[in-house]
Image (cartoon, rainbow, N blue to C red):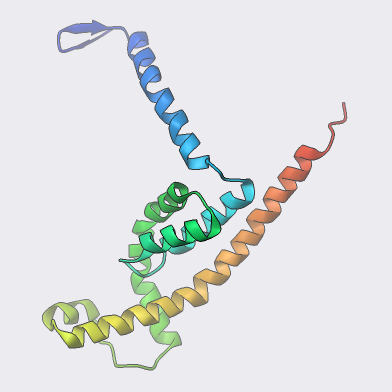
Length: 174
């Protein structure tokens, strides 16, 4: 028995209370996340959400998710959830995408090594210009790396899903 604020609850009653509260919430969450998703659309949602989740564009991924969910008729909540779950990875990959973009596409203005301190010290139009070049090179590096990986992953997921579907349709030998 545990004592909470002067009341005595048995462990079984607390667990029963938690189950009565949590179970409907979990079931509703599962229903919302899988609403309208066939296995193929689930694979599409995961691949697009992952690709957009690491897109080196801090301000625009939510709007892009809304547009792509509408365009491909995907579950918006599931797509946006994958996108938001990968936000820490997106932040972690900003610098590597920028460095790869600078290496792959060396044209444009010279960008200093300590680019972020330079942007803070010299605010104004020159910083905006530099930020534009950084974003452009990072997006180009994302296109070169993430899009082929997205297509490859989608192909693998589709193969796995179709194999599972064909196994479900075959009659069981007993």
